[in-house]
Image (cartoon, rainbow, N blue to C red; front, side):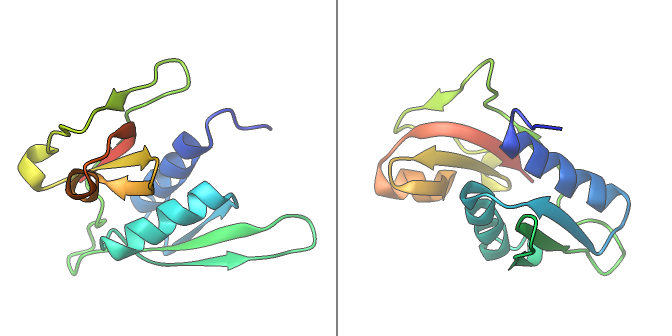
Length: 131
């Protein structure tokens, strides 16, 4: 089944795997999804990811991160900008939950967090928020 919104699919697969307490989840490969995985590893929301090439199609295996008490490291992850309603933010990017959470933006300088976008003085499309 073709996916219309690959970022929403990425987010949903991670959210569902975390709810089911799975250690890993497999996500079809795109460069955007790989960049998002890299950013989530850097910010400590997932343990690691691996790009696996097969004969049919490549995919990304994401290792989920859990706290010592068994709770998922991601409390909330939701899509902001959707194909039917794009949400753009200028250079004056607000903080999500007073800086506890992150907005992930697609900018002219690549995929950045809200803090990195403020430091580089760029705006862009708000892809999703995570806490």
